[in-house]
Image 1 (cartoon, rainbow, N blue to C red):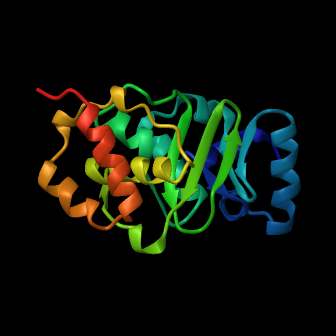
Image 2: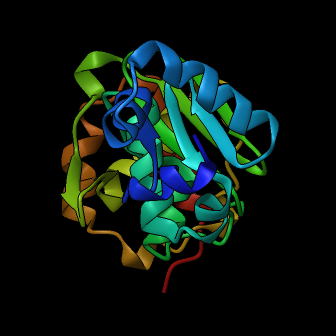
Length: 198
């Protein structure tokens, strides 16, 4: 079975089931086949049972990579500096690094030069995100407060001076803020007061 047969799979990333279906082979054989192509550098293992063609991964745009981030840990949504950078609220986002919020666990998946990091949050705070262009992403105000929440718990490095709060809806920010513990609200108010805003 040649690598060219995998080109039949018209998806940016795919499972072993996709490989078995496209190539007409047994599921048990796909693990061996995919491992062989991972070793050759033709496929990239995103996580167990989920792959992308190395060439395709290198050419994916931001939304394609956001789709992968949503898939690697379910449920999750794009947030923190990744979302704030997407909305133009910060310049602190890191190229090749994608941050998400999850209720399952804090975990990082590495795929070549790409890093997908998931921060666990309390289940009652898992809200305030939307589906845009097929991607689950925090609203700007929620991404901001997720960042302050984790920073107030000592779990996240946040540079308040990099934030442009003129792009934030203050009424929505206040609505979301009441969901967070007092420690987070105090931390947020302290940083918020220091940021120069026109």
